[in-house]
Image (tube, rainbow, N blue to C red):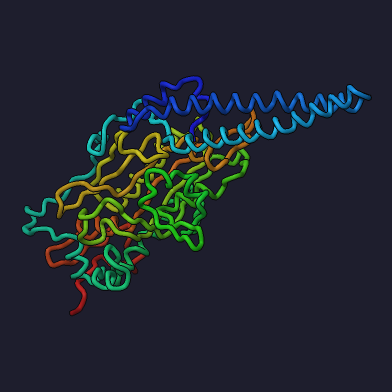
Length: 425
């Protein structure tokens, strides 16, 4: 939720943001009208309520016909107060409901356009020349089957399409990546958290995942709970309805949780292997900070993602995501795309978003600053989405015989193994 003061003082800023997202700016006029109606209704209620209180004092002092007349007016006023209070509550609810549909305000310097209009900020590392090495790179699923690392067939048998088993070296790779990610986050001062994978509707709505992303969410109606698509949801809601001490900011958390996504609208896309699946595990960074520190914290999260990718020796690019491809809560997002040899292109492996005060206003998470109590800013950043990072390792470090060289950073978590070798048949 944005600051209502911006609606009144600079509605054109909201219009620019809506148009940048490729959405209608008509909601601005709707909000302005709803806000005017709400404020008028509240004012009418307060005027009548003040008169009611004043009459109460007069009745106590009046006598005879004057008192009778005042009592009659008191009864009339009581009815009017109840009616105007109901009108004010309804107007307030209408305004709040509209505000919840409004996305965060996009920064003015974010690239304009849609999914394909991102700006590549930098390219790090050089993809391997497999042709020069004399062999054609296999894709991750072929390698995983050779190694006995992924079982798609049994995953589909047990759970349906886009589910899988990580087996043997595949499972060990995930544990190694998790431990490496948590160790790196510990070096950077993050507090580790094992976050709930089931959350209340208030947590989903507060983080903005019941807006444009609602169709991608799994819901358990019998329990009125949602399966999270990222631990960002639980981490953002962890301090909801709280007032934090500003001296404890910024707070850095790193959460580990399973993630569940229906992948609605992605039918026919990335159906082979484990690139786009309904369930995966992820290590996620999350930050609470003072609003004025959010831009700097965003750069720090991006630097941590880059550090982690480089620690594995993977070629990648950093993208400044275009305005029309931002989620509801993000004012700006950076993606890191890793190189996939079998596809001969870079694909998304991490992202980090600056959500400014948007989520904290919806979740009522505030801090006590020197000049009073106010909202905090929240930011999130993927450190390691397991299936995609496993894909990166298998494809980029594959050998001609089907074995895979283990990145040096992961070897301590794999008993010192230098290679993952084909499974015995």
